[in-house]
Every structure is written in C-alpha cells, then in structure tokens.
Length: 127
Image 1 (cartoon, rainbow, N blue to C red):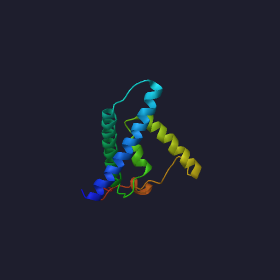
Image 2 (image 1 turned 180 degrees about the vertical axis):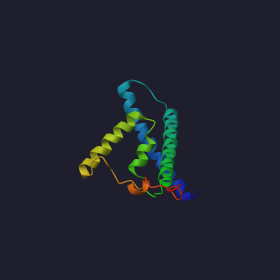
Image 3 (image 1 turned 60 degrees about the vertical axis):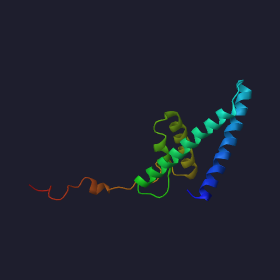
Image 4 (image 1 turned 135 degrees about the vertical axis):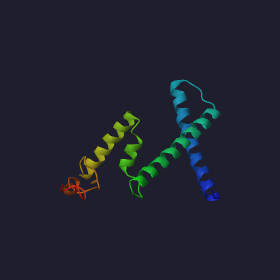
C-alpha cells in the first residue's frame, strides 16, 4: 500500500471514529450508559472492516455480472440476508424509480432473446 493510500485510509478511519464517537456519546446521554474510548475504537474497527467487506462484495458482484459499475441490483444482492434492510432499500429504490418515471421494472436485463430461448440446439431438431 502506498503512503497516499495509507493517508487516505487513516483519514477515513478518523472520520468514522469521530462519527461513531459522536453517535455513541449522543446515545449514551439519552439511554443512560457509559462508553469507554476503547469501546468506540473497537466499534470503529468493526464497522470499518464491515465496510471494507461490503465494498469488496459489491465490486465482485458487479464484476461477476460483467459490469465495471456497481448498480442498485448489486446493493440489493448484498442485503439478501437482512430482510429488514432489504425491505427498506427496496421501498426507497421503488420510490426513486417512480420519481424518475421508470416504475418498478428497473433497467432491462440482458440475455437471450425470447425467440432464441425456446429454440432447439444444434442437432436436436430432427431424429
């Protein structure tokens, strides 16, 4: 890893630590609990690792589909094991598509044309 990558990673972790720390501090005052700096640091590492794994999965889903860009379909695939999150994101995606006038069908899927899908393969037509 180059020094630029390490510097960027350090800045991202610092921003995440600050955000998580602020969230935990706010929650601790309303919920009446205390959190140590070690807890916030451990939670930050956990969240950062989860973000890295999710990003890697999204890249692999996109690559497997033959695309260079991550799409909403990749994100929905990532949420397949969390039904509550999947429902929230699906509702938001449907709302966004409705605003754009695309409806719920989303982008057209690539594949074999309908006529070719039922066609018989080479050598299977006559006996």
